[in-house]
Amino acid sequence: MNVIYPLAVPKGRRLCCEVCDAPAERVCAACTVTYYCGVVHQRADWCSIHEKICQLLIPLRTSMPFYNSEEERQHGLQQLQRRQKHLIEFCYTVAQKYLFEGKHEDAVPAALHSLRFRMNVHGLDSVELVPAYLLLAEASLGLGRIIQAEEYLLQAQWTVLKSTDCSNATHSLLHRNLGLLYMAKNNYEEARYHLANDIYFASCAFGTEDIKTSGGYFHLANIFHDLKKLDLADTLYTKVSEIWYKYLNDHYQVLSQARIQQIDLLGKRFETDTGLDEAQEAEAIQSLTSILNIRESTSDKAPQKTIFVLKTLVMLYYLMMNSAKAQEYAMRALSLAKEQQLDVQEQSTIQELLSLISAEDHPIT
Image 1 (cartoon, rainbow, N blue to C red):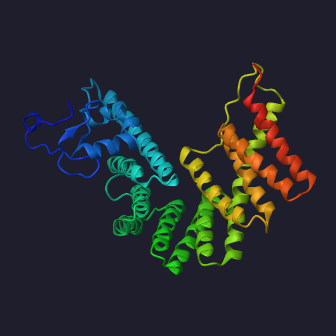
Image 2 (cartoon, one colour):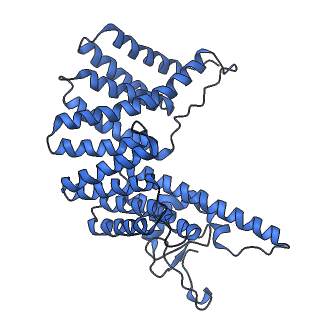
Image 3 (spheres, one colour):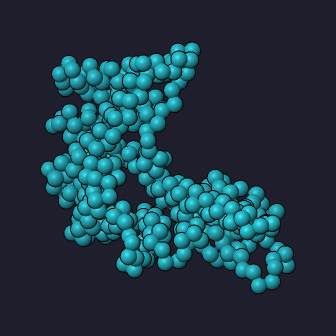
């Protein structure tokens, strides 16, 4: 039974909805430690994140067992903290993935979970809360809730200002989201200012050619594209493509070499690894497909640039073990290379990619 009976609740205890903090009327029957104001928010939370973490919440939200010694109690507290930290990162990654996929409504409950766990572990004023505030701000922007997004960003800004130990990576995220806010308001001057700061802080944290810096270049390129400053946009889109190509090509070369050397002696299908988490894979797909759409609209002017993005997507999907998608993009690249009568070496490179993908679909048994 999901409905909460008031008489069954201990006197003085206030049960709140997991999603909106309103008085709760329902409880999850599976974990019995998560409450909701109604069916709508229960279903939203389940579809977003709760199904994935339902049973993990039980030890976090029930009383700690009695321990026979202080050593056992400390061990129990450490385990509890490890579980909370794991859930912080897991919920954060899930919410990020939803955002890159354009599923802003689904991202909200996962981001709220990440925020609550951060508060439990780090306290209410910690700079560790900022990434979760930024997720909620980005989700609000995607849903067209500008005022709510501003509130989350103001909270994030205030937390950063109060902190004496805020990393370059956190500053980068804050400026990126402020840039997105001003883009949504069509205030491109402010947006450019914040995205330039995003690139600066990301470069300090990770380097100018890192995939974590590429997001700033990508959003700045979108601004120039909207302003019809196509040469600037083109330069930045090229940079984003090159960053992802280099990263994926490094992984692709290692994997290809391993297969050539027949490391897997049993002939089993290789387990591939992009080196990315699910959110980063979703970001790569979003950025590269957006650039591809722009490139294809002007492919008659610079077909090599379109082929370059297609080859990058081929490697991404190949490393993600999505052979169907990899083959689709490889065929499109080869077709365009032949149509534009590009040099034989370019066509040969694409053909090699296609052959490797085809071999992957029919592994030795």
